[in-house]
Image (cartoon, rainbow, N blue to C red; front, side, top):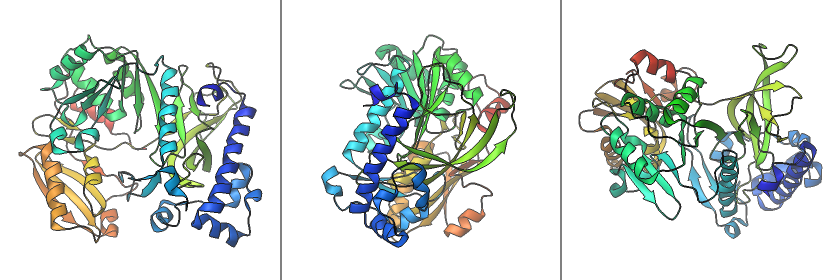
Length: 448
């Protein structure tokens, strides 16, 4: 479906989206206790919600409601779809749990393959991926720098060990397996590129680099493209899988209507900037509705990331009629810098591995001191702290003092002004190749 639908007219795309929406609404009403009761209270039937515009008849779904109604939001026939429980990392606040089923997971791969095909990728092509999550699965994997999965043609590179001392090893393994494409979060890709530039390694290239997971700043895009001699393709999504936006070869950020329904809430005007005279620009908050996750369909889910939109009728040069946004303003987390010069951009994933943590925050107050702030749940025990410290110590080393503080959720929020950040560092990202501390700060200090 995704291969053909990308070339449909806008009217045909929206008709396909609303067909999927009607199926989702009928399923949610029949199988999901939370929505069945909500519709009854509102005196609505599935026939009353047939279009995207009709969705406004339904209240939005905040993350707090997903936490509180986790069981009632599950479909009664969920077992038919073989779901698994997933959890967000909590980088924008308290983590949430949700179900994703087998068909939805399969479709996620199809969506990514379609986006990558815009850059020339074909299923089976070799690619490299910067990741930490894969290597946190067990202790034997955690200390490995890389892993090659021959069956999938995938070279996994452990982003927790990027440093000036290890860059030659990463370069050697890339030369050995010669992947054509590279994937990673914007922050991991940027630090990877900085280390390669600092080591004057210029013979590693990719046909395309795919960025996701956090905001890609223009300076980061330029750096990555120059170091790895390939075009950077950015994309936006989230684990709950209600919205997907991806960049085409002409720089258009296309919304994928067959993936989910994106609603733009709380629109706020923006200055026209460099756009054509008379073009209106605004920012808006993202709200999404899933169209394929039948074990736990989320209707009007408050994603709450911010996008920018230009109201223009100009068609994209790529030929796709999918709607567009002009920019995605995601989060930009700080990174942990170890005394031996390593950069750890995604240490917050350790919170996924420890039971009983309602909310966590990593604060690097000095080069050799890290404070872990924890809001514990009733499942948290002394063993949980032992496991947490072991995970963190494994990656920051023995030269960093690690302290744990236990706070209430309100007390933790009070320590941070504005949007909650899981990683806060007062230490500049030093020692990254030829980049000065000021340059590194400019690259990573942007906060959406």
